[in-house]
Image (cartoon, rainbow, N blue to C red; front, side):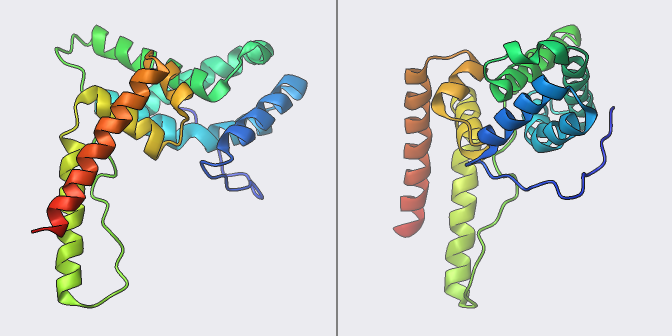
Length: 203
């Protein structure tokens, strides 16, 4: 596995501007092809790509290896990086394909697409009221249960859009689905989550 050190002064990006950041780094790579810029790209995207790989293969070690292999291949072919229209989506697709290839070679019988969204995440409270704490705990449990019980395709779409911040069109490319299907799956997910919230409110 390749390991990059944290670069001093590297800006922290949010989902709102991550695509802009990737585009800027891609332009620098096209112009210079330098290792420091590539390291910034690696550090910017590694966590999300690793989480995506792990959601497919359920192995931390193999997920690390897959993401590292993808970046190694990208570095070797950096001279042609300008031909990639959407680098972030390209890397997601590459990770998905390599993960599925690994599963196929390992003769897995079933592909488990996505790990539980926000596994173990808890709602942050600003109150010490025992009733409020109990309600919040129940709400969190219902939300996690609703997300956990989503159909595989629906869960995959929800994770890419809500957790990784991809646009509908980008998620569609990653999962090889139509934008309309992404919209429909998000509608299903949000409806189930809303029902989970209402279930807590009216109990």
